[in-house]
Amino acid sequence: MIAQHEPLESPISEILDRTVAGERLNADDALQLLQSHDLASLGRAADEVTRRLHPENFRTYNIDRNINYTNVCTAVCDFCAFYRPPKSDEGYVLDREVLLKKIEETAELGGDQILLQGGLHPEFKIEWYEELLRDIKSNFPQINVHGFSPPEIYHFTKVSKLSTEEVLTRLRAAGLGSLPGGGAEILVDRVRDAITRGKVMTDDWLDVNRVWHKLGGRSTATMMFGHVETLEERIEHLERLRQLQDETGGFTAFICWTFQPDHTDMADTSPAGAFEYLKTNAVARLYLDNFENIQSSWVTQGLKVGQMALLYGANDMGSLMIEENVVAEAGTVHHLTLEQIRGAISELGYQPRQRNVFYELIDDEVTSVIVPGEPNLVELKS
Image 1 (cartoon, rainbow, N blue to C red):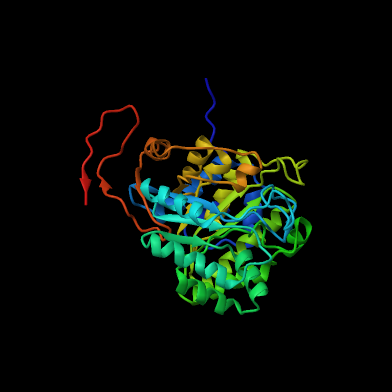
Image 2: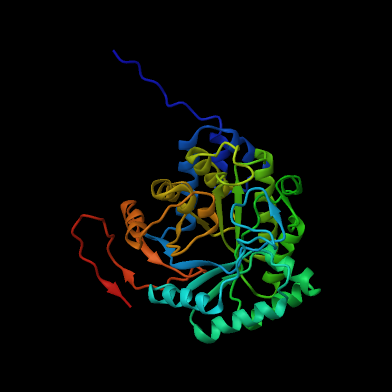
């Protein structure tokens, strides 16, 4: 006779029950979750919270292009394989015609946005960026410019000797639509001191977003983990973001990814794998209770793990990303087609829907789930 056993209760069950019920986690709770190896329980809880926040029968993606207008940078980041110092023979600034052609190609492929980021160029003042934005918007008024990460904005204030508010006000008037969350890495000064020089520190990174939000702008928040940070510092990063979101409500989404060490000055770092990525993504979903959206990072994790993130707290598959240069320089090159992104969503039983940076749906509604290889009757609604 086979003995009957009650299912074993996970040591983190009590914490997960509380957060699924809607109670806000504290830092000690979150640390216990990150220290746990019970990935299945974390995933179930994160998925329950995601379904509560997003009961709709679809999951989203967007189409954009990451245009890096220059790789010249005065900061020295040990984790970056993309930047070149100001006097490097490998430094570049994209010709305006080339940049506009990239945007034209993006629009032709159905994209509604460009992600415009670059190094901290020592010579360009605010007028250069205003002219760049005006050129883009005059040629492509329908394209949102999701541009200039907080380190860039902070750099602009120093080069142009202007306040953060004046820089952001002028860029917005010239055509800036939203701010990306790049350059956050880990929002703890000990970590930033250890891996970068000449780059914005934690409080100023957050303040750029605070000012932008108070001007009525929206931005995304990010975290790059799996290098020199401790688990406690990952939680501190999430806490600083949650506090600012409580204050302003200006973040549209959170995206995390693992550090890609190849071809960087930190190449001897053991890369964090899929287990650590999914665990951290799930804990972020549980901790960031005031963030509506969590985005998968298939760019660093690949198709299957990126798809699994939709079961570990993410409600968005991220961007088709017609072009990506920064992560690619570190040797991580994952390319997906639109069909693969839509198929990954459909395989999980959801409708794939295209959205913009503000998480507004911009496609026609598909009333049946498209399953690759299966016959489907599809009806579009305008």
